[in-house]
Length: 85
Image (cartoon, rainbow, N blue to C red):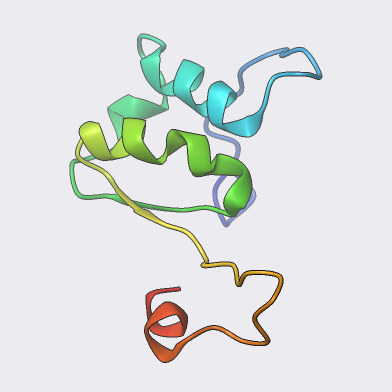
C-alpha cells in the first residue's frame, strides 16, 4: 500500500505462524512481484520484526534501515546508536 492509500499489490494468505521477514522474502522472490517496482539502492525502513530479512535484501542491492534497540540494562542509546537509528 502506498502512502496515498492506493493498494499496488496483495499476496497471501499466509499461515499465522509465518513471520514478517519470511513473508517479505516470499513476496520479493515471486515472479512479477513488488520487486519489479523497486530499484537498486532503494531503502526499506523496518521495525525489528523484519530483522531476518536484512541480509537477503542487502544482497539484492537494497538499503535497510531499522531502529536500534537498547539493552535492558542501559538507560539510553549512545550518541552513535541514536544517530544511526
